[in-house]
Amino acid sequence: MKKLIYCFILLTVISCHDRSEVTPDLSILAKQQAPFGTEIVPVKLHKIVSDTQTIGEFIYTDGFLSEHKKYLKFFGYQAQWAATFFRRSDSYLVSHDKFQAAYSPEGRSVGEMKARSTMNYVSPATDSTREVVEKLISEPGTINRKYLFNKKGFIVKEDFTQSNASAYNYATTYIRNAQNNNVLSSTYTPLNSAEANITVYEYDNHPNPFFHLGIDWNGENSVNSFSPNNITKKTIRFENGESRVTTYEYEYLPNGYPGKIDIKEVGSVNTTPYILKFVYY
Image (cartoon, rainbow, N blue to C red; front, side):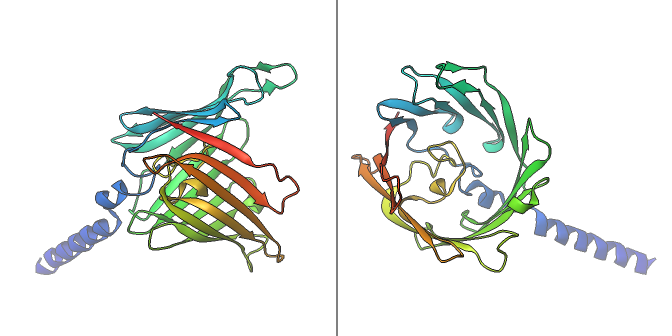
C-alpha cells in the first residue's frame, strides 16, 4: 500500500511538472509583437495615399486593428476591391478573414467581394511558439506558419509550409540588434537547403507605424512590420552571388512617425520611385 501511495504521489508530481513546462506564460504572450500580443496601437495610422489616391485604410476597435481596406489606384473614384477583418478574444487575435473582388481596369468595374481565405491563430501551447493556419477558399490544402519568439516577444524564426506545394516551403531565421530590429534574415528552401538567401537591413531611429499593426502598407504580415524602427536599406544577397538593394527615404512628422516614404530599387531597370504618404487619425 505504501508503495502504491508513493507511486501515486510521484506520478502526480511528474504530471504537475510536465504541465508547468508546457503552460504558456501569459505575461510573455501578452508582450509578443503584433499581431500576436495584446498591446494596443499607440498612434493609429488611418490611410495610405499614392498619387493623391487612397490605396489602403485602417480601422480600429478598442485600440486594436479590426479592419483593413484596399482601394484601386487607377480608378478616378475610390473603389474598394479587398478587405481583411480581424477577430479577437480577450485581446488576443483569433482569426482574420480576407475578402477580394475581381475588377477590370479597362471596363472600370469592380465585382462583388467574396471570401478569399481564413487565417486561424492556433491557441498557444507555449509562450515561444505560435502557429497560424490559412485556408484558401478556392484552392485545396492549407498553408501553415509557425513563428518562434524570443523572451522579449520578438519573432526570431518563421517556418512556412504548404500541404499541397512543398517545393515552396521555406524557413527564415531573424537576427536582431540591441534595438530589437531585425538586421539580418536567412531563408532556406528545399531547393537551397545547403545555402540561403541572406537579407541585411538598416534602420532609422523613428517609430515604425506598422509594428503595432502586425501588417505592412499592403495589408500583409511582412518584414516591414517586424521591427520597432523603419527600414532605410534592404540588401538581398542571393545564393548565386547576385544582390538587390532597396532604399527607403522618409519624411517625418513632429511626433517622429513617418509621413512619407520614397522607395527605390538601386540598379533596377525601373527606377521610378514608389512614393507613399501616411495619414494618421
